[in-house]
Structure formats: structure tokens, C-alpha cells
Image 1 (tube, rainbow, N blue to C red):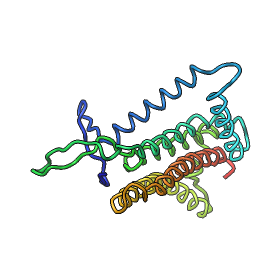
Image 2: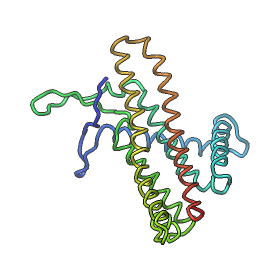
Image 3: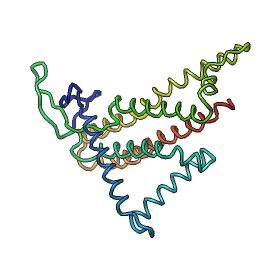
Image 4: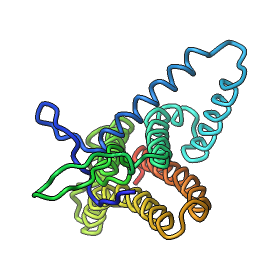
Length: 247
């Protein structure tokens, strides 16, 4: 198993440097599209089998969303992007645990030295991926807020000229908190996934075969929790953005 803090470049397409993390993310996206297509094609008026499981799972997710938003209408409005983030992160975390991820690669020559470059890399163990997800979540929050209360009223949450300096100071803090979300979102997900990858490599190196199994199941749990927390926080921020006028 290969450990590197930064994703390694595999090839270049039209001047775009494709890293192993980016390449793996493309595979995850294709898997999600194929799974969604197969589920959609197999849907029937009377649900059976996998359709029952899928509908029950989505209904459970909507119920959790209802407990946050307090409105089924808002839950259904926010659900597409929140669920997309959840499944992309979840599948990305689980794909990174498959055999061969980090061990199948190429040997290239860099600066006169032979370097091993894995073809596949856990996508959320790359800070670029988690930062991109954070940007999507935070920018979507701003769009939701503007659509809910209007551009001017939403802007007053951050820029509220007033004779009371406290209101101006609070607005500045609100603006800083929005930028802080980029850091908290991206580094939380990256740190947990990358730390899990390192843990599995170290344990497998010290005591191979049997010892890594408990940690592997732990990573299955952590992978789900990280996807759930990211999606839930995004949903909470969406809800708070719609209350900007009250604040």
C-alpha cells in the first residue's frame, strides 16, 4: 500500500492534469449513474425487492430531513443536493476500501528515481476533492438563502450598516463563519478518511491478514458517519440560510 499526502498525476488530457484521486472519482460517478439507472429501470407500481429497500431508505432520509427543516416541502427541495453529496461521499469512502486501491499502480521515473504511483486512490483522502465538495455545499447554501429571502435581505445578514456597531460586528462574524465552513467541511472529511487509510496501512504492515479486519469494519462505520455528517451539516446550513431574514 502506498501513502502520499498529495494525489499523484496519472496523465494529462487537453492540458488538464488527471490525478489518481480524480480518476477514481470518475469511476465512482459512473458507478452511481449505473446504479441509479438500474434502480430506475426496475421500478414498478407494486414495489418488490431492491425497490422496497430503496424506497424505505429514501423515506428514512426524508424523515431525518423533516426533523431538521420541520417541513416536508423544504426537505424535498433540499433533498436532491444533500442526497447526492451523501451518496458520492459514501461510495467514495467505500470504494477506497476495496482490494487494489492504493496497491495497483505504475512505476515511473521522477528526477532520476523510480517512484510507485497507484492508479486508484481514495477520493476523499485528497484535499482537493473535499475542498471541492465544501465549495459546492457552501455556495449552494448561499443560493438557497437568496432564493428563500431575496438577495438584498440575505446580504443584510453580512452587511448591515447600522448606528449600532454591534450589528455591524455580528455581520462581519457571520461573513467570517461562511468562509470558515470551507475549512471545517474540507479538513474534517479529509482528515478522517486519510487517517483511516494510514491506520489500515500501518496495521496491515505490522500484523498482516487478521489484525486489520477489525479496523476495516471500523472504517466501514466511519465512512458512513462521515458521509452522514457532511450531508446533515449541509442540510442544517440550508435551513439556517432560509431563516436569514429572522436573524
